[in-house]
Length: 386
Image (cartoon, rainbow, N blue to C red; front, side, top):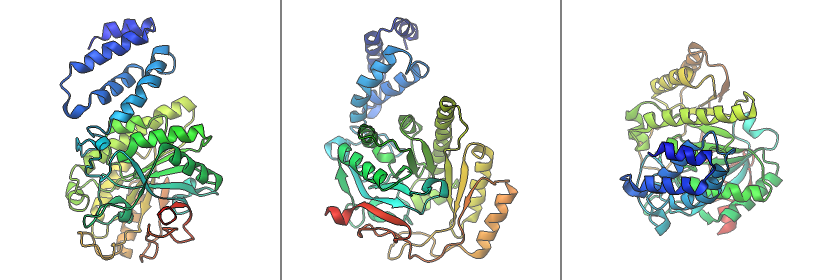
């Protein structure tokens, strides 16, 4: 790479020279699946890491080039670890089941999240349709997974319509904008965030995800996401292969969570505060609590200083689904064992659900309010739209 020439260009604030040099550079790389613009974007981000807000060239590139890159990211999709390489702009769908359109299944004021995320007004939760993981026991399977040849539930919304929904959530008292399972729709969501800002919606953005994400995609969220809420489902590739169809989930999720921590470290340095803005969730799987112990050990060694833990006991077999999954709830003995492990690993900062059984809390996205009235207040729903 012609680093000396770029350095001179930066020194003299020659934005056009920088742009031309980097375009030539990316042309020389043998990039598969049309990732040229993405590579150019990440190269620019690296070069202007220290100068992005200080050097006019950096601001110019960010303003002029970013929208072009975002619009091209779907053309040979490599947003997630599946790396499908299909053209979602042309209407093709990969593993997530989605084109470049942003589809959502519901928007609610949610009271079922962790206490700091709910506050007094509830979490303004937007459920994105489609998913790049595909857990067999997913409680949101109606909107996240296609079944029997039928597309998952959801309605396409423009960036402007997304912004209006964010405004409605704000007006209902939401503490934040909580994006559920948006990993496969990052470019469209970023355009939605920008449109929401223009409407005066300045609530913190919460990224509620499976952690099955590319670190480069997480980098795109910097500057837009304030709170990270990733799952760490398992570190056992046999379990992730069996229930998530993703044997690479453990390695990928661990790397993604470390990347999120890095993003927040930079954000906190800019704010000069040590505020905790990350919660790592773990759902205990009945019959597989040794996997939970492995997750707790990793969290204590790698993330405990930067994030809180949320231990979830609500695993529920999904009725009338033929896919392979544990067919019972968590036992009292398993629950007590995991509580002992929390003490063993000195994990004190976080949240732990009481033992939950029953399936009356499972959502149904065909209803105006997918959840019970105790858990949520509907703001935008599919029945109202269809």
